[in-house]
Every structure is written in structure tokens, then in C-alpha cells.
Amino acid sequence: MIKAVLFDLDDTLVRLNLSAFIARYVAGASRLLASAARVNPVSLGGPYVRAFLAIDSQKRSDSLTNEQLFNRVFFEHTGIPLDDPVIADLVTYYESELVPGFSGGIVSARPVPGAREAIEAVHNLGLVCALATNPTFSLACDRARMSWAGVSESDFALVSTCSNSTRCKPSTRYYQEFANQLGVSLNECLMVGNDAVRDIVRDGCGLRTAYVGHGRPGGAVWRGPMDRLARELPALVASMDGIGA
Image 1 (cartoon, rainbow, N blue to C red):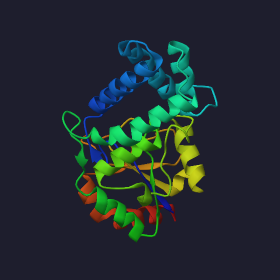
Image 2 (tube, one colour):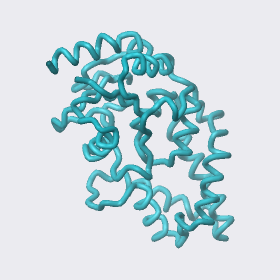
Image 3 (cartoon, helix red, strand yellow):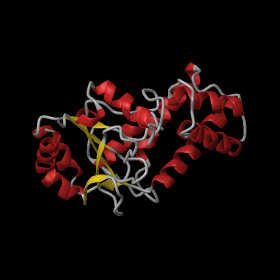
Image 4 (tube, rainbow, N blue to C red):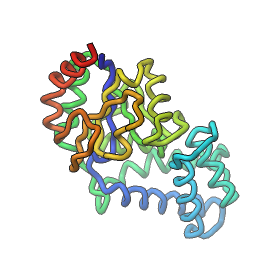
């Protein structure tokens, strides 16, 4: 029986050029940290890439949160301790005050049609609604992108971030940890996402996915645009509950 609906964020609830957003984020953060550490900001681009790749690796065996591993890798390559209180305050200011202004230009962020309605449909069904975005950023960055989608943290029982996750999608461990925090099992969850690789888990863990991307991947229980999902979600959940019974 479906008890929770998990939404991806980027290109599921908010349409944006994600690569451009990441590039703009890294460029701005590099300038800020370089000023504090008195180094060339260009020298920080590579360490940012290495840290992102480290937390995204599907071969990880550590038990660190994504934030802890990111900070460790970044420190190893720069000597800059991102968890130092002074540095952390700088990053928090940057992410809370400056990143929300990154929606324009080449990032071109705007709400996905039907996103607000789909979330309201979940609440109307009395189901748990959660944001299972790939946990590579902080809650502050997630909040910024949520605002571009026309949703807010209050819409969700839980938001995945780099600080409350130890893996990234499509790791089953990521999804299992997220479901555990919600107090449900994966076979009681419906994932809504646009990424045929990251949002569809194919290892028999029980998680099912409604696919709102442009392709036709195998393994999805439903395919179509978000605005149609908003209309059809009650029938979809009812049919899945019937299959489960």
C-alpha cells in the first residue's frame, strides 16, 4: 500500500539548466573562499569537481554523510576546512543570500507545469509527501531551488540534503535511508522523477517510479508529463494499492 510519494526536484518540479547552476554555484563559492584563504579562485574549481565526484560515487564503502566526505576531499586538495565555523558561516551566507538570485540568465529556472498541483494531490490523498532530491547540496541550496519551483520546505515531511544522506542516487542505500527517516518501507513509496538512471531503482528493492521525463524507460509504473500525473495520481495510487493487495 502506498504511504508516501517522493519527488525529485531538478527538472521534475523545477525546470532549469542544472549544469549552468552548478557552474555558477562553484564559481561564486570559489571566489568567496579564495578571498578568505588568499588563493587563486581558479585553483578551487578542480577540488570542487573531485569532491562532487567523490560523494556521487556508487563504489563508496565509507559511512560518512555526503557533507562530511565532500569536506574531507575538498580539504585534502585545498587545505581549506569547510567545516571551520568561520568558513561555514561564509558558505551559509553565500547559499542563503546569494544563491537564491541565480535563477535567471543561462540557469533559466521556472516551475514545471503541474508541480504545485501534484504536491497538492498527494496531500489531498492523505499521503506523506517528501522531497528526494539527489543529496549533493545543502538545505539552503535546496530551498533556493524549491522557491524557483513554487514550492517550499513546508510542503514536505523530509528533504534529502548532503548532511542527512550517506549516498547519492541511484544507490539503494540512499533510498533506503530516506524511507527509514520517513518511517516507511520502499515498497510503500512512489518515486516521481525525470531521470531514467537516478530515479528508477532496478535491484528489486520495491521502490516504484512515476516517470515524468522525456524518454520511455523500462521499469516505470507510469509515464507522462507532471500536469497529467497531478490529475491521474489518485487513480494511479488506487491501482497500485490494488496490485499490492
